[in-house]
Amino acid sequence: MADTLTITDNRTGKKYEIPIQDNSIRAMDLRQIKVNPDDFGMLSYDPAFMNTAACRSRITFIDGDRGILMYRGYPIEQLAEHSDYLETAYLLLFGELPTSAQMDQWTQQITRHTMLHENIKKFLEGFRYDAHPMGMFLSAVGALSTFHPDARNIFDPASRQLQTIRLIAKVPSIAAYIFRHTIGRPYVLPDNELSFAGNFLNMLFRMTEPRYKSHPVLERALDVLFILHADHEQNCSTSAMRGIGSSHVDPYSAMAGAAAALYGPLHGGANEAVLRMLTEIGSVQNIPGFIKRVKGGEGRLMGFGHRVYKSYDPRAKIIKRTADEVFEVTGRNPLLDIALELERIALEDEYFVTRRLYPNVDFYSGLIYQAMGFPVTMFPVLFAIPRTAGWIAQWEEMLLDPEQKIARPKQIYIGQKRRDYIPPEKRRP
Ligand code: ACO
Image (cartoon, rainbow, N blue to C red; front, side, top):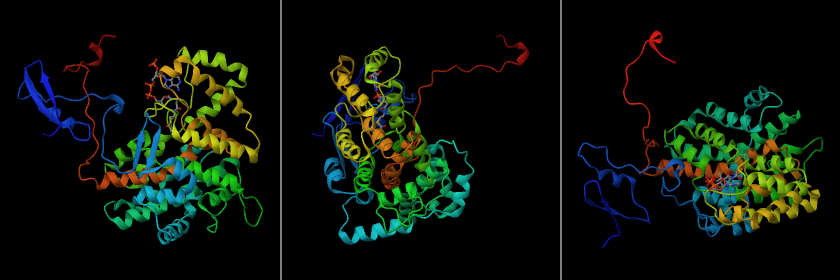
């Protein structure tokens, strides 16, 4: 017998057998539950999608209770150890690790598309010197749709493939131009002989030297951070990507929206918020007072807690190791002592323990970025670069899923009942 859920409606005494598949029921099956035949039917109410799956996906698996994260079945720890970002992006997008020949072709395709149209430069020059990099980033990504109008052919696989390559290849160039704009230095052209992370560092930091050579430890650290941030299933920005993409807009416009979602301090802006918090705390002595205020409801311990991880975020463990390697090269970030002490206290404190609040990916990533020379405002942009792979993979999966339609949640209306318009002179305050 197929698994079913039996629901008894006490209003009518009727019983309903709802099929269970993958340990879930279809919300549409609830619609048959009615008191009167002309009722709309039962809705499920789930603000913030706490317990609602909006898709079936083959891309990323998370078990938040056990601290497991896998891309296409490969544990994140193995990818962080053995893979690089471009290979991981290929895996996310195409479902399998590439053969050597596929990897060569993929690398060549990406490096061929790293250049930006000259007008993008002019467009970026229009921003004020103190514009937030993420505001510039999401505008530039949205603007790409005007440079590549062919991107609107979203059901043409060749066009999708081309936009995918363009997006993965161009986001580091956009990010680097934004950084150079902020610090008032000339833009640096991509060097396609370098690795993905190596070239990014070149575009960021090259001065007058004929060829930029990054420190191998820093280049690898950046690549590992890119692997860790490449996808995270149905988070806020990915849901935005899918939701906007469900209107069949081009991927650049959808990704501008996803980047806007990532900008928020509860999501990709968290690493920036962590650094601001650590700077504000200022010294280890101030930590007990700060923790007391957080427990009293005055603000949050940024970089702690996660909607899905109710144990240690597996990415945070890898990042902590990477941080040690980076600090060997750059010198210790003085804020690290505050971070370590905060973590120690929070992992013992009853408030955080009972709420299962552990460090998330952003708790240490900001310290690494700062040690590498990035201003805090660049942090969400550094998150958006690798997340591009995840956003596109999820967008394409949504487009090709025959069950998906334009995303349109329901609401429960709690406003005024019908009433008649009152002319201004007859209105009472
Ligand atoms: N500091 C203090 N208390 C917290 C924190 C925190 N960082 N996070 C959650 N709590 C408390 C809440 O106040 C709440 O307590 P209550 O039950 O007494 O009201 C309880 O823990 C549950 O919190 P929710 O907000 O319901 O948890 P939710 O799953 O909605 O939030 C979120 C997850 C947004 C990540 C939250 O933990 C948070 O704001 N963290 C800080 C911001 C952050 O680090 N974001 C990065 C997320 S990772 C990423 O996007 C890549």
